[in-house]
Length: 81
Image 1 (cartoon, one colour):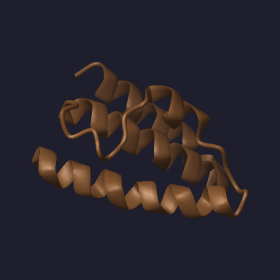
Image 2 (cartoon, rainbow, N blue to C red; image 1 turned 120 degrees about the vertical axis):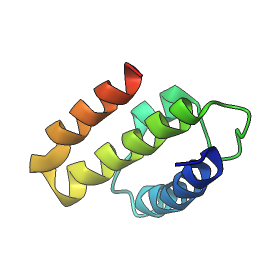
Image 3 (tube, helix red, strand yellow; image 1 turned 180 degrees about the vertical axis):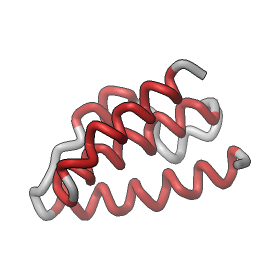
Image 4 (cartoon, helix red, strand yellow; image 1 turned 90 degrees about the horizontal axis):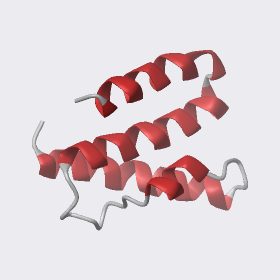
């Protein structure tokens, strides 16, 4: 997948993240600590993939808690690329 496409996905998930935060459902602390936002187009594709996975993990905690471990394994794989 191209970097531009990764950033589009990141932007979309960022909007969903904001909706969850406004509803008071989640804090997305790990994502905030990473400090990579969709507007940071100078960051690497890998950084944006990590940001995407951190948002997904937090969403899974609310939507499907049993799948969180699988998502964390994917994040670890991305980190070793």
